[in-house]
Length: 241
Image (tube, rainbow, N blue to C red):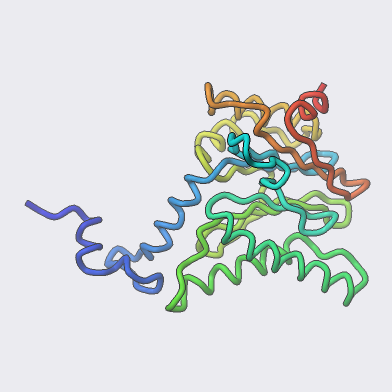
């Protein structure tokens, strides 16, 4: 009886380092890290006609935790935000690096940094941890949204260090189901309010009984003001009326 391919990899040690390719051409530690991302709580980001937003499930139900300390969407600069899925402590290192880069850019050039420069710097660092020994890959995917010269932009960086620009995207738990629904229902002429309503409907459809508005967090950036605005729970409901 042939040994399953996963057991073969473990027996031969292909999954013991991030820098060793398996015979199939895979970096197994990277694939394992991708599984960690899909176990993280979900976020949806969307580019709209009047700006960009990210709505995220905090997935925090413990009444002992102060909810404001468990933000899922983080500010990088006043015009750029990021949401993460995976190991949050890994994400914190990348987010703090991005915040410093954004402030250095303002001091050096007296202008706000472009969202793509942020996602590129994050992706470059993540790629290094798939190429050099002695460290594991970052077990986190980051979605970066912001305004660049009054144009809303959305990017996502994966475990390998690749990144792409998106009109709309989802990361974390049930990401494929969320993206299937977004492919079917998203239109490029949506406003932020209509986009948030669509995202809520999709969350409710995919999460079913687990859906809880009280766990959701919304941050949006209007392209005219280019400033972050944060809403949670019932305030999200009021926003889309």
